[in-house]
Image (cartoon, rainbow, N blue to C red; front, side, top):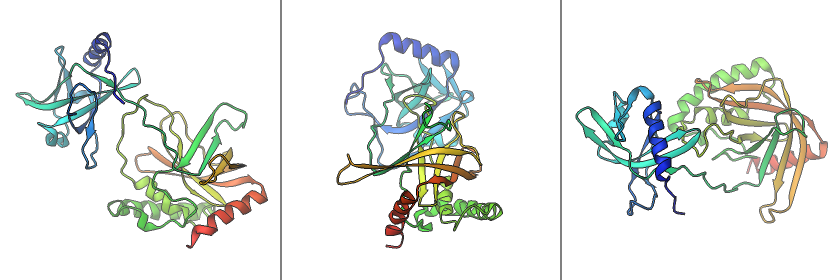
Length: 311
């Protein structure tokens, strides 16, 4: 789909906003489109991490030129390359593509005529299991949090240490040593299988990505689930966080892969037994046990888990 650039008036307002506010931006290498007017960005095939440029790294001239002052060393590799520059304007994600040039004062970015809105990534359901957590503690309340299987995590199967990328296993091991002690002290971690996925989630090196709207609450990731417990992973954004020792109403939903329209919903409640956090205190895992669950639903979850646990 062809993206429509901001209008001339919108661009003028955004440019003045950038100049007045010295707004932080992120820079990612990108290939320029074959047709520079189509507004499309073609990312490089290799994985790249955005480089965050803070206000003190930036000086924006009225001519629409961004001068970089003492930027991070990682910026040097982008000189002479086409880049995608992203930033927020009144919480709306915007971007443009340009070449990072080298001038006397250092690297520079010329803001082009075309500035685009960051589009929401299309939502594709790749799972047959999801959940809804009632954050307000009232099932009829308006504060509900969608929960979906975390990317790359295989639920209803035995967690394996080998699923953690080799370069992250050192950090994951440090977390595991700490969390095993924490779990033993609490006496609420069961057999501890869920700790593998918890350490994997917290040790992951996840780049910060610009979104269409800044500060929007993201779905919680489901990291582990069986007939006894469910574990959620989430990023701390100041708006939503779970509390240790608190009970939350929960609805689990299963759909048949062959017939997605047929679902089984399970009403339950879970209590946060232990909260685990990463070293930066930006990502958390809530290890919860069911405080309310019908016996027939518990059997269903048990069969779901054990049927694939040791295959």
